[in-house]
Image (cartoon, rainbow, N blue to C red; front, side, top):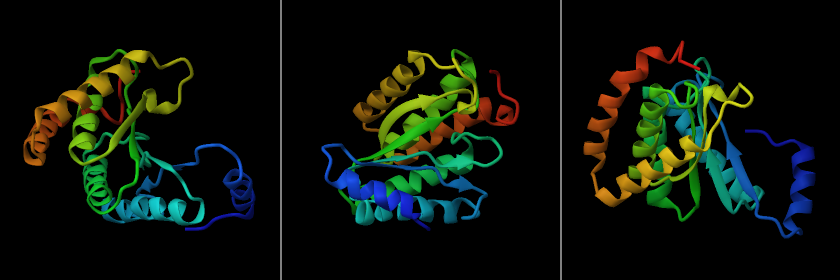
Length: 187
């Protein structure tokens, strides 16, 4: 992991300014880190890099699939699960998981993607952050409904007390409904 001088200069300013410093981490699955295991390690390492060097007070994670440009496929949900559990079990960091869906707003598929991401993130110890739809590529392709659905599913999951095994079973059923359409989702 590398840090450029420009970022270090900005950090010196921000350390003396009254702003909340946050880290935003988006390692690419199938990028430099390789598969899901390597990308999970990079995601957790980013938390410590930003905590130690930039004194980040909050952390936003959105690992992304290099081909699908979303984080709701099976490998990335696993990656979010193991990295969230590691961070929740071993740190006191405020870490949020950002949902990036392949499908567009107000489609049936976006609800399945949001549900899978929200359930996995919640039972794995992540806080939830608002969602990006349509691979975060199209302007004017977001509504408030996605964030609301994401939050309500997260609250319901947390309140239900389901185990990680039960959550995994539910998410497997959700993946059956949309996984084969990730390469060509409805926008």
